[in-house]
Image (cartoon, rainbow, N blue to C red; front, side):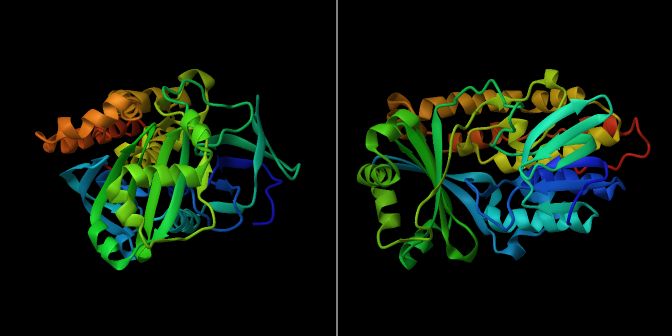
Length: 390
């Protein structure tokens, strides 16, 4: 797609799961949709790459089968703090798939639905006018749109920054590894969660037998250590299981991906009047594994409510109501996990009650809100039936 000089009916800024799902749903309903993706080529992103039952359901109903893309199955959680490890079954079978593969599959489906995809288009300014919206790109080109949806992930657009995160002092890292064969087998089927001083992280297999290590650490602790290499060394010294996993492992990249700040606990504010999806709408702590399902759900919900002639404020209030209880619990647990008492006591508290991990996983899932969306969409007979949440 060479340009968009003519006015655009619906413009989605951001090509992640939320933006692609939204664009796919609108285009499938017959609307003219254009999507801007700032990256020119497929790329990796800082992400735990965990697909919950809800996320898998959304993908499959969109025509994407993660297992056929190579996703690895996860049936167990293994929590480690120091030398103590507690294991529990997940209340569902989850999958793990790299964002590089997943995002490309979603963009392809959006394009097949009729959405016009524009690569390498970086939005730098968004202005509201009486007749709609104006978006200025880094290239100085301006795009005029009737409706704009913000799906820029954890990266804010200038002038439209998110406010109100509960936990904002964390730095996120991600690295893919090739483990030794015996360690690959030991990790298979599990999501291993590691608690360490001022942070926590997860390790799981993705497609192609690679392992994804994604973690967050408090900025002050990272500064005291000096950087990624020192942080990883410190973790391996205190976590024998992680040290074993990474023994004889080969890093897939010269350096990890990193991101900061991460506004954990953030929920969008209805007052700003913008259609925000994905991390622009809500940022749940990564240990819950619910980020991807929220992204896909918010994109679908925004599309359905827009097609039902509901406002951005209605959508934001609806999404917040669905997420607030799980977000509150997840934020409290995340804050506890980066503090010494929480890190030390967690395995002792969970050892007598291993099913508590399963219970926590259930409590931080997206609630079944299909009936709420259906009721809203039934007010508009031309609106498409919403994708149910299982």
